[in-house]
Amino acid sequence: MRFPELAQVYTKMGCKLLLFPGAFNMTTGPVHWELLQRGRALDNQIYIGTISPARDTSAKYIAWGHSSVINPWGEVIATSEEYEAIIYGDVDLDYVEKVRQMIPLRDQRRNDLYEINIK
Image 1 (tube, rainbow, N blue to C red):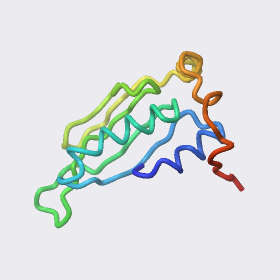
Image 2 (cartoon, rainbow, N blue to C red; image 1 turned 120 degrees about the vertical axis):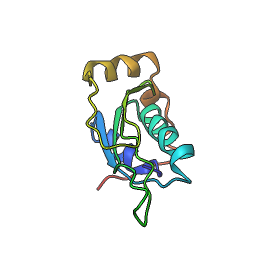
Image 3 (cartoon, one colour; image 1 turned 180 degrees about the vertical axis):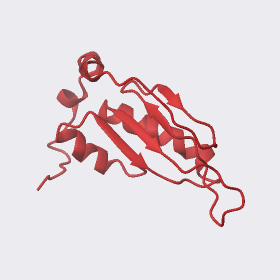
């Protein structure tokens, strides 16, 4: 999720929901975890779901937690805390198209300046 190219490629292939497993730590998690989720959702106008392990302070690697669902407008529609949990978020694929009509990034993007080749 940290690098935008993967989400761009899948969005060009027609995906409207991407799921990212991740285990950001206690340093990067509080600052980057939600920010990157919202950024990928906004950049690509898609839903983003993230899955993180729950925080275990006795583990060698301590994960931030906070699994989430983000809509194409960049809003957090479901999230957990650091504990083990199941979260639910309504995914409306028609809303993806509505957002894309409001801000037509696909028409405004300058693919002639940078190209991601899908093979």
